[in-house]
Length: 285
Image (cartoon, rainbow, N blue to C red; front, top):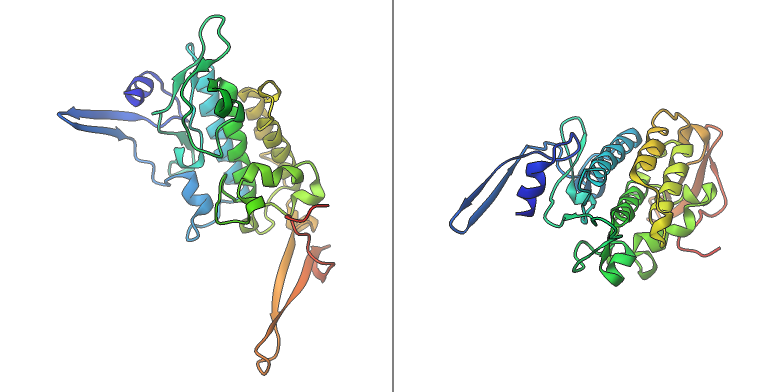
């Protein structure tokens, strides 16, 4: 019902189109437009998928942001409440469209500052103040958007139980590295292979940090987020060209020993050179 109510009234290029529905006896069926590229989640985290280029990641972030901005700016504001990579669908041109409005709620009315509701959503994306109090605002969506920005930046999921304890929660793990250009490069998605804008990554990291601020009032509004992301689209200072992409190269010993050794290399000035031990993002400094 929530899907039919919201998508029956709302139309935007960055929202998936609801074509129709079936309600017969106990059968319930929703029919959406076909999204041939699937979800952002599949492109970021499935091993067999081709890595999304930096420019495409930016376009997806901007499209998703415009979808949220439309919801928040509607005559009766809508809080999406379940913004995550699996709910961002992609058409053939990688245009991002928000889907799954099952948890969406109408925003506060009149003098009310928030909506109080049962805590629902996906752990790792939900804003901490919503989890602790049940108070829901548009700033809750902005926290979730910040988490997705960090996923786009690092290629890591919001929550990964298979990782070491200190790295399971993306927000907790990556926060110390977002304000330093030197440290940030060690947490950039390695699948980008250095093909990303150094300045763009820094600005996206800072934007993500503001979005996940513990104080909701410190989080930027969607128009500011869109403006910031759009300003990064034409930057050409790629990390490899600038010599900012650290790599680890493995070289084999002789076949006689059958062993292997790690040679730490760094790309500088257009050449790979031996460097000091590679910085460990889990190591406190």
